[in-house]
Image (cartoon, helix red, strand yellow):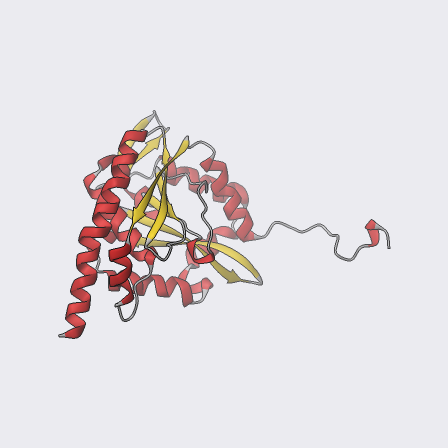
Length: 256
């Protein structure tokens, strides 16, 4: 059978989900991203995590730790705004956007779970929210994203452009101040994923000794390499300090 008669050869329409991802890529092109990496020793945290019941995800640990670091480093809560004139906008708090893979309408769908002010929330509460994003029906837990994806392309991009450039205090609430994306659960590392936020965190598989590679993607319009390197150093300190202390307290409370 010739190529034109191959039943596997066909044209496919771009789904609503892919269209929403493409919208994000359009705006991500403006960010001048560069990576800063550091190997973390998280053996102590890994041992404490093993003693948690129910166990807390590594995603939650990194998410809260980075929000604590962002509280100490104001540039991690800043964003480059082009309109009506180029300037930086600084949010008073952090909002994390977690990239997640879900199945919806017969295909993989990229969804973004929102975590408001994670630095102030207990690990257990953050884990419960992650569980909701992971298990509840996509059309319910990601209702706004599903609705947005079904709007005409010009309207979707106009809304995103407005929220990026004119929404002020609503920008952080709607789009986040930083993102987290990881494939460590699949044994992979996505070190150069796109983002239109000032920073995005990812980490690779955690080996048997508790070590992993952590990458921070930064927008050079807001951050320089030295600032990013200090943030990564502080991130490891927070993971082995405040986060480990909360895990230890949870173990003690359960044993009491």
